[in-house]
Image (cartoon, rainbow, N blue to C red):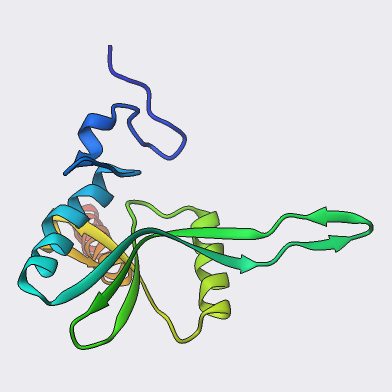
Length: 155
């Protein structure tokens, strides 16, 4: 019987998302670390990589006498490159509405931080920014729709 996944589609079998004795939140995150970041660290292109770096998007406050908890966000990776630039990287399979909202809040609170969503798409050749993958998927859908429309008019 297959193991049940969490609401975030994470398999509870930590062995599948563990590499170099680090348990990652997802297999996707583990693969990005293993296949992309570690080789960059080994080559010297990346001088440091911090896992699960926390950010506060909105501080706690009091409203009508009640304390409203802060909005927090934990990035998959904070990366510092040899040339001095830094990036906050989050691996995404299929972002939900909370992810989109937190991305907007992050952009607002940290406008000078290079914040990227990275996805893996075999059909698109591997690791790319989310926006690139989204655009390519839309192009493929449009082409499928055109093909279906053409086939329907020919019959």
